View: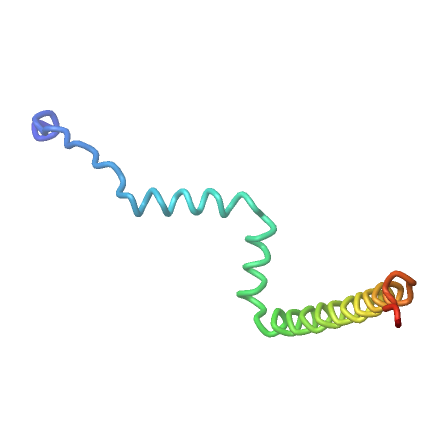
Length: 93
């Protein structure tokens, strides 16, 4: 019992910068529950995640291709309108 009373309390060392950064990262990361659950699904089911990503990428590229074709046709119409106007035709002497 005498040993406990005669001990000198030691100073508590503050956490290092790395520990503070880790706590800050986890606090920000754990706020978004959707991201955490999606990350767990990707870690647990990598094959199904890869298949989903493959289909998602394919669908996105198809949509971007269709949008590009539509924009090409609408741009072509504007060019034709500009060239058919009388102001755009050159005068022949």
